Image (cartoon, rainbow, N blue to C red; front, side, top):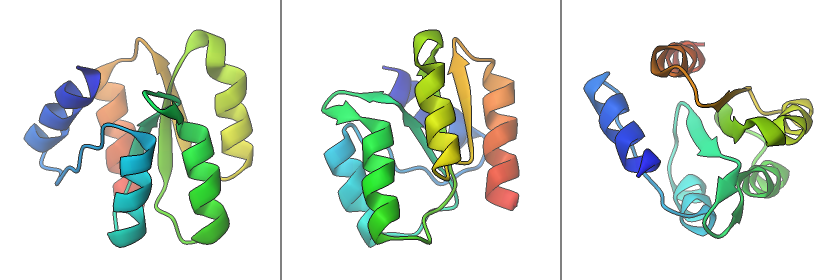
Length: 109
């Protein structure tokens, strides 16, 4: 539900959006297309979004900036991912305007 809501939000904000429903799907899409920013939850239906990021980064050092969404209890994981090269994170529940502002800044940067 959140993924679809964010897809609608970012589309209304003028972004071209590709919504993937799993880490496996995201890995395939990211291997075949270029993106300005990736927004990912750390917890995905089929695993850990951070693991997807780390595996992709190992094989594709020119990945777009990754922004992770995390629950309060996973902040340590988000910090670990920042040290590994992720661009930023937001904690849930998050302010939608802040999220859009962060994504816009990463896309323009």
